[in-house]
Length: 146
Image (cartoon, rainbow, N blue to C red; front, side, top):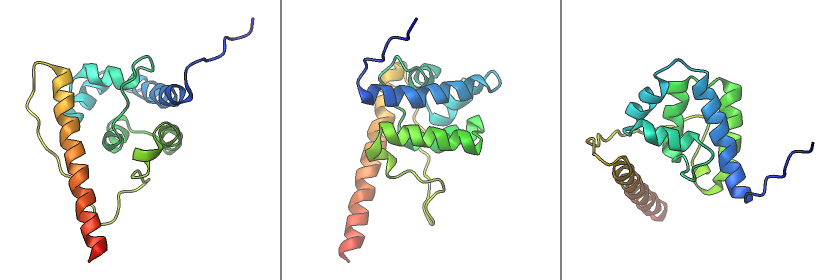
């Protein structure tokens, strides 16, 4: 019997593709990997479940990708396949992704206290990321004008 066609929009299929790759990579790792990821990302295990489940529409924030690669020990071919799928799903944010960190770039970590509501904690983290990205864009625009 023929398999039913996937009638989801292309964008949803693209997100599902990288989520399936991420879930498979995590499933091959030792137990506790989801918890280690949650701690490293400053979130709860439920958020990890959401970003690895293709049924959820919650996308993976691009700034978490390198941390995920490190915690899950992605092999080079896994990393390449994941980045290809992620770029297909999110061409805008994926522009900033590189195989290597930009020379001279710094990574800052901000501790967000645990909140009772994981969704609110994720919102706080996303708001901080958005604000930081806007500030970085302003700074870069200012350097271009100089």
